[in-house]
Length: 167
Image (tube, rainbow, N blue to C red; front, side, top):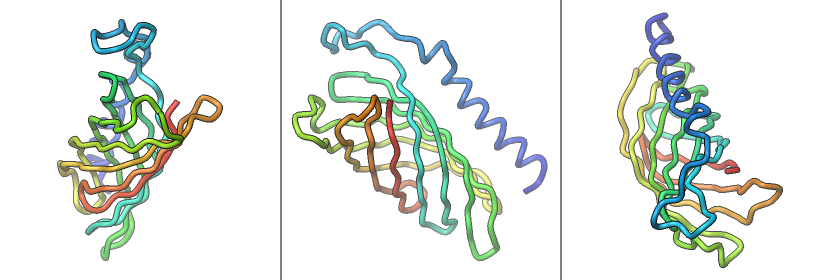
């Protein structure tokens, strides 16, 4: 990777993480669509994703999720990892912004399905930066020790499968 490409990747990751600083992680006032006591605030997310496309990749990431309405969430993610292609291995990174629609927002069942869509940008050494449209389906499971595990699969720059936890 050239020094300029490395600097651009790091600057992009730093810029996305700056959006998630303490000011945005602080509690927000409840919105009109939320029941009393349900605050709109950022919650941390940790994840691992695998991509299969022209550049296969494995990435570890973090981000934040905010409740927008009773059944709608905004998810922001920054991730970094390794990618592989016929030309060899290299650095991979991405930033995503997704809206997640919960099919069972009241958690009636021990697991709940959701659909998500949004946009992202991905960097793979040898291919550079590119924009992506993202569509996912996923399931989140019952909360344990203040974390809620999830798995998801879909498309966005190729096939993607991932999972992680939300606090």
